[in-house]
Image (cartoon, rainbow, N blue to C red; front, top):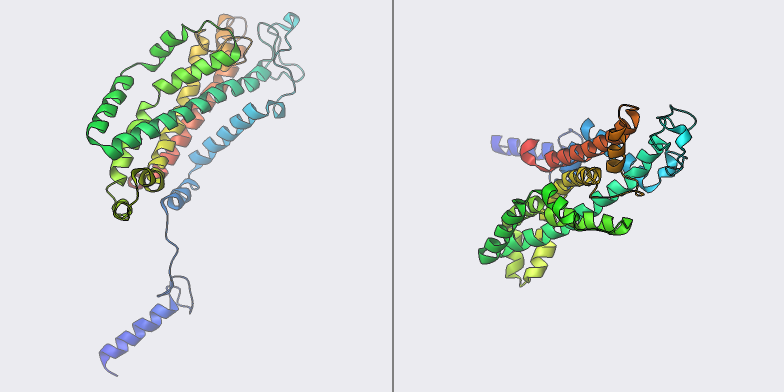
Length: 318
């Protein structure tokens, strides 16, 4: 046997044994390996980050608080007695009572529902608008892109809180459902621009890929290409932006309610309680600090979660 045949035989035997040196070991030559996906790589990166788990636990706690507040407190947030005004902790009221004699902790727990409801629905509507505008602009380009891009620039130039104040001043109803719907509508029509820009950029990159060209050559229409081939690639960066935006929408709702033009009593909201606690801060700071802390932790959790997901889906940041 020649030297060349000897080397070839030894390499063939090593390939059959695999990297671990044992026959049939994973990774041996000729055995197909499972392809690694972007989502799989992102999950492997996320589960090693403490910030991801901390923010996820906080988000789950706030979601459970909004869905089932009875798990966290048994007191009725509307059970108020002036005889307990600014009283200290007693019974189930671990943070005492506010100016109206209401349980401060119970109101903070029940206030999560309105704030999270407004933020979640606003983020959902924002995502739908951003996906529609961003995909149309990025896919068709030319005059469609020019018109929609100018529309994005116009809406982006409008200050969100200032425009929300002007628009919500026109809502005279005290109905809880109407005011919640008005706040959601205003936040959605003013807050979709950043996500639309991200979707547009992702679509422009995705439509130049080979699989899109192959689908087009096989006769696939514009709708099928956008929904089946481009949308999955544009969805991940949009979800990251919307996760961060959800925290911003919760903060915006609290700000509008604090100013008295968002949600109003008898609706229980963190912004309403912060405003009420501000007035009587000298008598007792707890009714101000408790809802403020709940709001700050919730907004921070969504922002940290969005940042962690963004870093995991961006290969350049790994």
